Image (cartoon, rainbow, N blue to C red; front, side):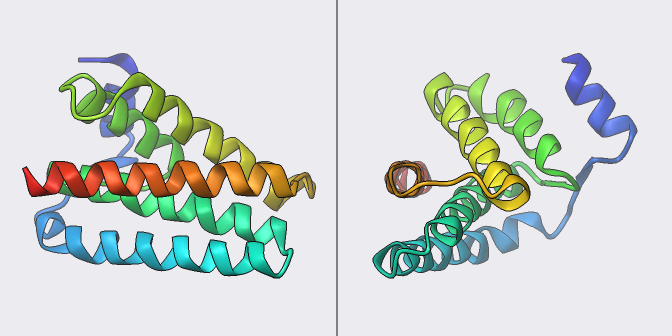
Length: 142
């Protein structure tokens, strides 16, 4: 077992969650809503919020994947660890997708905590979030 995964499980940052599979669709719907909100924010030049909302679209999309595995994360870091161990290593997502999620997390933190954001960053992140959501919807349909 990967050291990071083991630590997340031991510290209960990642836990088994019996109701998880029943909540997958709720997470997908939240991801869609956050993506729509991010596009609305972009339209009115609220680039900080567009960035944050696009990240949360990706967060809920990622969470839907982890919920399918019967787990729930307690931190954003644990979600990255879970994606890597439960989805990347099983071939359900690519390394590029995992990298994009980590980049999105960094962009969200920069926007939220350091007031660093831009139109270009928001636009790029919205496109990345939309691609991630569409790819996960395809996984679900298989």
